[in-house]
Length: 419
Image 1 (cartoon, one colour):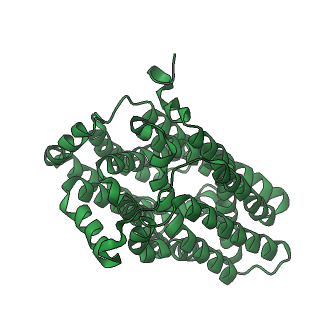
Image 2 (cartoon, rainbow, N blue to C red; image 1 turned 180 degrees about the horizontal axis):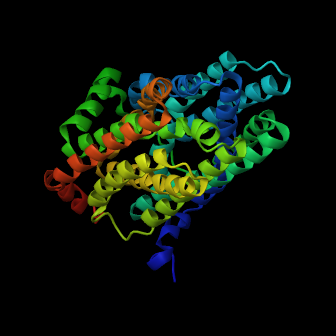
C-alpha cells in the first residue's frame, strides 16, 4: 500500500526530504526535553514537597508565551524562520547545560530552576510559532500539510513515551542531573537537521504598513473570522482548565498512587502512548471533512476521562485513564491546529500561529498556578474534577455551534481544495 492511501496515508509528509530531516532531528531533541521535564518536576517536588511550587515553575516557564506571543507574530512574519528556530535551539541548549551543572555540583535551588524555566519560556515564545509556521515550508505539497501537522504530534508524543520513562529510570539510578545533560546534547540533532535543509527564504515584505498595523491586522483576522475565534477559544479552555492535570501528576504518582519517580515516568509514558495513537489516527484521515465534529466529541470525552482519572486509586486503571486523556487531548489540539492552518491566510500565518501558541500554552501558566493553589486548598482530586467539568461544558457549547462554524469554514476549505 502506498503512502498516499489507506492506513499508510500518514506517511505522505515523508515524501518531502526536509520534513524527514526535521522529524529525525526533533525526535532525539524532544526525547531529551521530556527527560528534562520529568526530572525538573521531580526535582522541584523533592526540594519543596509543594504542589504550589510545581504550579509556580509551570507558570514562570510559560508566562513568557502569554506576554510575548502576541508581539512575536508580526516579527516572525518578517524574519527568516529557519534562522530563528536554529538560534532558539542554541539558547535552549544553554539553559539545559545550566541546569545540568547546577544539579551535578549540588548548587541547584528552587530559584535556579525557576530562572531556567523562565528563560526557556522566553525562547519558546518565538520558537514555537516559528516552528508551526515553518511546517508549510518543509512539505512540498500543500495537501500533505494536514499529515505533517499530525505527524508533528506523533513526533512529540513518541518522545513523550520514551523520554519520561527513560528519565524516571535515570533519576532513580543517577539523579536528575544526567537528564538535564542528555537534553542539552540532544539539541545538536535538530541544529544539524536544520543546517542540512534546503528551503526557500521565508522572510516576508509585510513591513510596509508598520509593525502595529500588522499586529492589528492579525488580531482582526482572528476575531472577525468565526471559525478561528471559536477554535482559539476552545484551546484557551483546554489550556487553562484541562492541561494542569500534567502539572499535578507528581502529586498523583507519589501521594495518591504511592509511587516514586518511576511511577511518574510510567504515567507520562502512558499519557504519551495515548497521544501518539491519537496523532497517528488523525494523520491517517483522508481529509478534513468531519474534523470539527470530531473535535467537539473529543473535548467532551476528555471532560469525562479527567474526573475518572482523578478518582482512581489503582495504578493500572490510572494508566488506562491517563492514556485516554492523552488520546483525547491530542485529538483536540491537533485537530484545532490543522483546522487553523487550513483556514488562515498565508500572509498572516505566523501572527495567527502566535495566537495559537498563546491560547494553547500562554494561558497554561495561569491554569497551572491556579491548579497548584486549588490542590493545596482542596486537594488534587477535586481540582482535576473541576477542570474536567469545565472542558465538558466547552465541548458541548462547541458542538451546539457547529452549524454556524461550518457555514463560515466550509467555503474556505472547499476553495483551497482541502476537503
